[in-house]
Length: 499
Ligand code: SF4
Image (cartoon, rainbow, N blue to C red):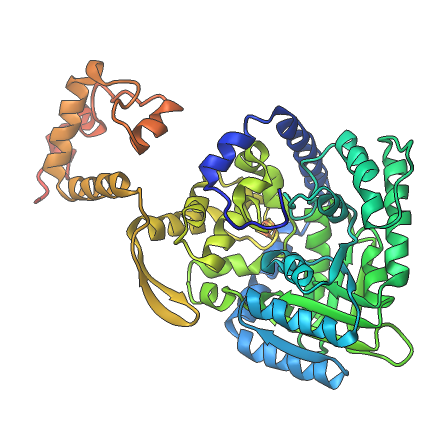
């Protein structure tokens, strides 16, 4: 696997392969169950969790409603503090801006930290094409990069790897990227961490350019915030002479005080910690302290189009805690790579089709990568109703309709392969609109119930659906008939309803 999501298969095809990988499933099951249990305990400690959750959702909603205002306020504050703000409408523009900024420094290496946005834009590949090496410094990202792999989890990008695999990757690959791992390296976590620490220390001390993301941007002061657990972020943010931060425009909060909510909900939801071990904040540049040049690249890449969707826009509230991944039965079995984007799991299933559209087979399949059990909504610290958005996006896939693409209203056609679903839904709508037909159908189904097959014999989606489920046998009597028989026709107000 290379560091790109281009050309990945649809979710069902990718999941068909990954669900057969028993080692992957074992790794995922162990990791997600451990994290979710710890998170539940950390959340239980707070008596006002639901209020914090509601406050986080309300804060994000208000900010998104006035996004243009807060972004301009942020730009003015960053500029006043000595930083430079660049606007990138898509991935290509963001990569071009970063590449040119690195070239201007004359350097050919950068260290990176905490940037899902650059994973989304494919920055590492763009830099490599320009002859610039990008070194990931988060431990899990390092494992992914050395293994020529892709992240499969928001918080634990190498969650699909176990300790044996990590030891082998370090032994085989570390030497070709810098300081080699000891030849007798074991799979002891402390030894693995020490090998990574020594390898990365060299990178930090030599790096002249750092590339980061940010968890939050404070509009009133132009401050960026990174929360992390390893301390690598602080090295990347303070040691290089030039710092370039690539951040999605939805990461903004109006004031410092707003952080009070998110700095409580984010660590408990993600790492089950009461507070983050490292919270780094920086505002522009300061003489003789930290980088002397700071560039902020504000990334749209489909976000304003998502904002135009009154149902789907709630996905932009996401603070990337990953709690929804850890409770999702589909993610636990299929793994993160099956989602074919930087954003796996339930949030990926609603965010990616909004950022990239639903035209490709992969993106059209993502809203179906869910059992709609609702566990993701229950744990989300900003109360994103993920099942609601999934159903909304399924309708878009099946029916097509008007969407916003690059700020323009555009009509998209229904995706291929959903004709049967459309026909069934239209038939259901007609039947529910015609009570006599519904009643006749129910009686016919009840009388012929013994003939009802347990599987749908026809090829296509219906067969695929019933291959993994029993078709429910109709009841011997409909509720309406039961009511008539037990309570009498006088109480059956609907019996004589006009068609
Ligand atoms: S959708 Fe909610 S639970 Fe999932 S990563 Fe985003 S904030 Fe966390």
